Image 1 (cartoon, rainbow, N blue to C red):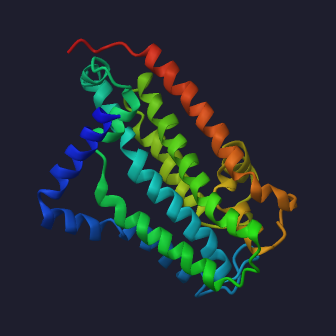
Image 2 (cartoon, rainbow, N blue to C red):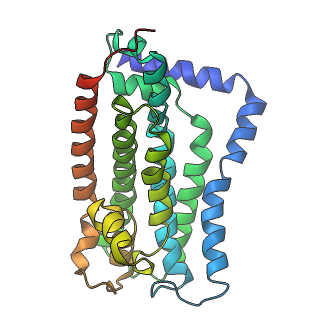
Length: 263
């Protein structure tokens, strides 16, 4: 743990050394999360409900998704740089150190500037919880805490899974973005607004419906218009654990498959 802590301190020190640049990056990084909220506000400028939910109820979904994705992106998102590491052979320098490869990759370029996005996402989520008219019970308080944490774990697993493709396909960056950043966009809105194979693939096969939509319905006490039972809102931790197990398996397979470029 000492070595990992030293890597983290080194990253923090290097980023804080240029305080003006760091401050500008902090401000600039809120825009993508703010844009998600603005998009919801624009949509409700032309309609009173979206997927059967009013503005404040829909904001619970958007806020939970933004909070989970922004935090996962800050903590795990830089693993997508592995495409560069594998292509140039720099991944060899990671493997020769007496430390685990994945934590090294996460700490070598931890983007602390994205802390502002995570904070804004959390702020939107708390605001939505306070204005959506939720009838609070001890179980719902627990779900309100556990669901975004499970979302962070789920998105973190998606980052690792899509990054692991680089062990076989070094130009897989855009392919991975379709599932990570595409997943963020998908989870920002009620699943019921999508239809057909697209909804089946992203919502249920890949599990994105359990990041924010079903936990939000359980918090709001609103039945699912698609027809799934209410207890599905409590499945978010199980889906996150399944995604983590799959990410671990694919990452280990990728490490075994990796061969140096020799450069």
